[in-house]
Length: 317
Image (cartoon, rainbow, N blue to C red; front, side, top):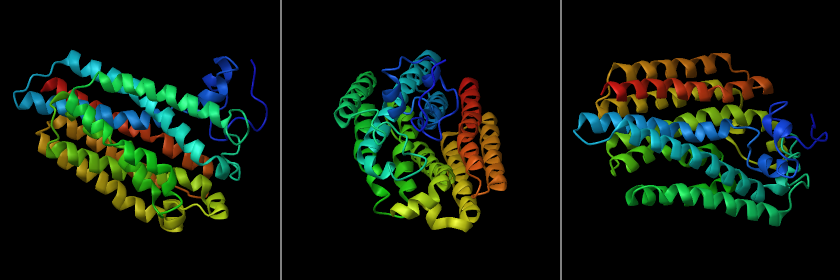
């Protein structure tokens, strides 16, 4: 097996990931630029989309609207492709803007741009190719959903700059990463009822919470280079701040279920989701970087627990 040279694999990439093991050598820097060696970001972008598809399907069934399982499954597959493409594009754009800062931070100095694995021109070309993949997905959606999706681009574009401006850039990340919570409703029923907006708001708080945990890995480096983050702002009080963030996320999602007329299976999924978030708060040690990364990654499982409940409720509906 060929392994990358020391210092060229980002510190938070899993050892022996598929990119290092199986991808052609000329593609590896670009796949790392898109974070293909760390798929957790694609999962976390995708999961609100799947929540929305499941909840919108149940909402439609209970309101006499025509949505079949095949339509929902096809939409989930489209969203999976879109999540991979747009997460990769977002990471590429982030690294283009942050290439100088990344070279000063221990965890990120091995990224393709600051380490010289990819040129700036190559990064822009790769960004355009990923944008074309996202455009393909977009054009498969109805006009209302296309309009909703396009309205997110401003938030996505400015997010990488927010760490230089506000103390909780994670809030802007939440606004961008949670947009999928609107998209299932927009695509299936071509409307955004209160249930969709509440699901979106709950997802935003969830993202702020889990990305605060993630940001504790870089707390000292961020302070050194002058980058703002909720991890620096909350510092030793992070656990106390996570309680209202995660409780608010669960509460708003619960209101979304109520607005959608969800059944017991959906609430069971929500209970498992909330329990997982509570367990993260209980285990958190902000000075243990490895634990912070594990807790951050575990949010994929938390999100899938909620999705399982929503999907079962949609089938029963």
